[in-house]
Image 1 (cartoon, chains in turn green, orange):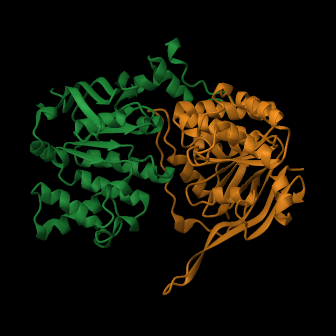
Image 2 (cartoon, chains in turn yellow, blue):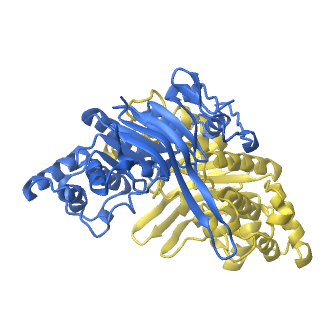
Image 3 (tube, chains in turn blue, cyan):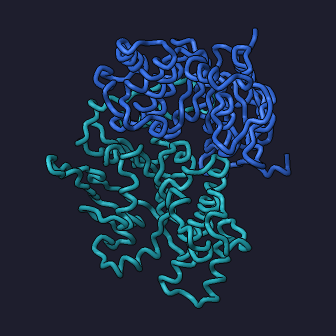
Length: 272
Length: 293
């Protein structure tokens, strides 16, 4: 079966820096692919390249991004706008930065629906309330009229998810969706992601630095280091039998094992 | 005798009090008591707003507590004059979370590390220069980089500079407030190893303030769990992780993502209505206390 998303030899540069250097992977329908790496590894730039929202001076120089068989890098800006939201939903790391502080929660969701012609002015509010209920926001009839600053971090991230799924996209890209949250709230958001995926028949590209988040949610994993995918495979293989020294080092960096022992960590690249 | 003892520490902040609004009181730290033994690593864990950082800051009087007692080697530091407190801080130092905002960007790394020595008027200029180079080596930095500014260092290296500054006066007690939470996991591992090495080498006592339970389990001897300004459970690390008694501790532990895709997931949700905030800590077994009825 044709993969839902196929990234081929993607290269994105920031001046002389190869932020994404010849990256290829596939994501199949119904699957959660975890893209894991540390800061500067290129995982977020990969995500932004897929939806063509790389910030200046970043530039996609080559490669193909096949989504449902179409190369997104060959689309006009107008066609690309249709893909964003309706084809690919996006959940950002900092919901406070991604939400407009002077727009009510409901207006954010309504905007997404109206842009894609999926609601009329008269029924947008009702649809927004439904979506808030779907992401388990308590008292959605009241929350729909709240401004982002009136919500807790966890609730804001739920609103982000409501916006992302508003147009029923087949694919959602979530960039560090739980990083800024407390651990108990993180657990709730991860549970919600799994549930949304089932209920709305989503495929998920999950970008994270946290192997715990990967272990809880991903079916397959791609490990990024310095702009390249150094290893990818089923989640169990990556955890049980990592092949690349960088993957091994990352896993050995996570506190665990015998308390008080030295953490092995990532060995110098020269020894790979 | 414990090195540090905190008794009934309270810090209230007043909030609001605008034209049409009544003042309200936030009980950031609400009657907290614990002790830290010589040579151990004692962890204060909790989520944002639990009061763990405020507790640490009150202990060094970086903010003044509302009431309570903090004794260091048997003396109540809350009764110290400001001059006496400054002297006492030679022996009690703090390492901060954010290696980006906690170092002055206009000062060279050498000046940052030397500053405590200058303030406390220790050594000649040449002696201080040697001491700073030694401290650099101690925390794994290259003394060739002494004259660089903070921006030229990575996050992990900056945290080492912060550590070198904290160690400059040979303290015996260090409060580390989320010292690695801003760092990448591979860098975290290096800094944690360094903290453990330094503890052994210099016989340090740590109060470790953290939200990362995997990390806490790895490095601490004892743990106190804070929730809404209070300690709800306290005991030896293994005891807390394997035999948690308080509903909040259980919920917190169950929320930590397992680093094993096959680990069973049994999320325990906390019903805040079932937590009695006024419940006192009660001993449930040797050295293990929990605020349960």
